[in-house]
Image 1: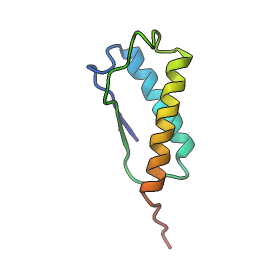
Image 2: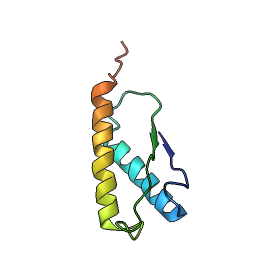
Image 3: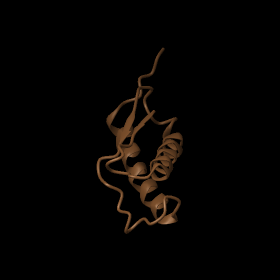
Length: 85
């Protein structure tokens, strides 16, 4: 599992680290359902500092978990688990 969090989208290191922790926490919830392969989660837009004032805010954590849960749920349906005999 990898996380790509460019500085241009999340300026502060504390925000990037908080996002990274959420990625790994949500991924762990889906671990048994995901195929065994490499996954990379990439931040593709800026974190709105006006909406999410603090990197440790409950609103940011909730928004991240909701978005990540949807992404991992989509990955579970798109990438079949290979069963080895």
